[in-house]
Image (cartoon, rainbow, N blue to C red):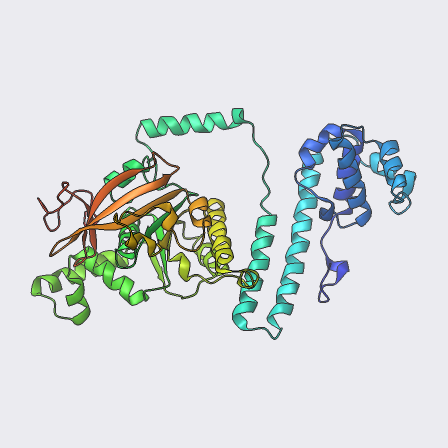
Length: 457
């Protein structure tokens, strides 16, 4: 339906392209393969053409011939024949093209015109919403949702024969074997990269879960620092920490500057000397921080899409339980809200071809058990988090020392490799740095600034 602000006579469409699609289909039903997956009844501006297209499709999909006579009979049985111009107009359609050779191109034109009309109608509806009385944030959410739906509508895909995919995949296998392309984006932790069969992959969602104060936010930021240093555009959406705090943590990590002393200004002379180079290095990284609280799925999509032109590769969300649901899910329950957000994040990762690192809280049940090691059942609020994730990495405190902690990490779910892998990490909170444990005791051989796959490398 057209909005009141749109002049119907100015809506883009091509009568010739619509007629040519239908004419080509009437004279050659095999042309449906080149048009049927691109168009729907609503793609046609002329409602008669939409009716005829749907009728042709219903016959072909029922393995029946769709020609002038059979289409006319089907329309007549539904009392639509005269409305669609009758036998005379169907004959005109069949005679409007000499062959069905260019049906695919005609279908593209019809689809493009339909998307253009939808864009105009969506813009008109957005204008109405913007002028309404609802709270401005609700209006913004609704408008972003409208354009998000429109974008998905314009991205249609069709099945591809595996034969056509093999050449590309064989080239990829050879490039991997020759070391010309990395299998994934490195996290900076060699053992974790190995467990992920080469690192983080595009289109995947990795959930990093832990109880509060274990260090999941610090680990996520350290991973993003590593990916940014490797040249990958990375973004951290923090609903818990301010951008200034994220920046301080990054400076502490890069400069080897005591985090507490950086915040209170009581740095040693050596740390002051390292501050300038750390700031210079951080300023050059393709790294983005955002501290908006109460993010909705539309907010997350908008921020990710806004960084699309910069080449976004890795997005971290801290943390999912702090996100706000849409109006619809708010009327249901918190599980529904988290489910909506979780599914939307998975769709976003796949659509944009990025890795999304989702931080998640664990329930208090883990603290009541004899073993502090979390399980998938400890994920809070919704089973959708576990279901939608490609990888779930869980952290827990193993041992605590004077200057660092030994943190356990295991992968109870791992679609990129073998599930159940466990490893120990050392968290040097004083400098916001993470390392692989040197040995099982995690206290032996520990050295500040060691280069064993940590983030100070």
